[in-house]
Every structure is written in C-alpha cells, then in structure tokens.
Length: 186
Image (cartoon, rainbow, N blue to C red; front, side, top):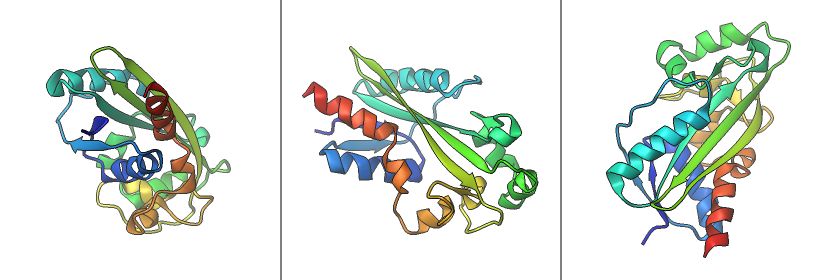
C-alpha cells in the first residue's frame, strides 16, 4: 500500500519526488486529476485548495505540489503565475525578457501539501537557481526550463530532464521535508 497518492500531471515533479522518496523508503502512486487552480498571490493558498479537492475525490492520503518561480530582478514576477506564462511565452521570449537583468537569480518556491482525514501538512522550500543567458534545450510543457538552472548553470532544467535526473538542489526540497515528516509518524 503506497504512503500517499501524488496528484500531478507533471513528470518532472514525479521524477524529483521519486528520487527523494526512494531514499526514504516512502512509496506513492500517481494520479492525474483536473483540479481547479484558484488565482492567488501565493502557492500556499493554491496548494491547500488543490489538496482539499484531491482528497475529496480520492478519499485516501494525497500529496500535491505547487511551484512559484520568483525572479528578484523582475520584482518577483511571475510568482505563482508561471504556469500561465509557459502557455503564452516561448523559451526565446523568456530569454529576451530577462536578457538585460543584472540580477540573474531565480527562486523556485516549492509548496507540497499532504492531506488525509486527520492531517493537512504544508512543506515549503526555496531553491535558488540562475537564469541562463542563452536557451539550452527544449521542454514540451515548460518553456522557462530552457533558461532556468538549479545546478549553478551546468544544465538547464530542460537538459536535466533529458538526463532523467533531478538536480542536487531539487533533492534538498520540500519532498525531503515531507518524507522526513512521514517517517517521523511511523
């Protein structure tokens, strides 16, 4: 019996969660549900809302993840709206938008929410990365992956996906906090 159902359609999130959960001996199944994503200025509110919906449908322990991408050089833009930015912009658009920035930092604000009948537990992590100066790789769903690196610029996230391995910083993530908490309960 898995420890939880991970409700996501995002293969990258599954790859990262799987690498961390395997190290802890935590198991999960995966389910894709079309959940309503509320418009909010923070991932915590979005995550809690999605977790409630997922639990109401599955009636078993669920985990959801919501990512916000914060670019300090753009005053925090796009934040929780990156999903929509990826629908409108290409990797080249992202590169042009950020090409003149002196501050090349980007922060992945991860929110993971565990929900069962008795508990709702929120885990967050801020993973620092860099905006690359050129487009490297291609991702079918996330255009910004081609200019975003979480390993100091060695690989774009699009390149890391082709290697089918999460970056070191992703392994020190909110999934790590989730697994630590789950193991403390057993």
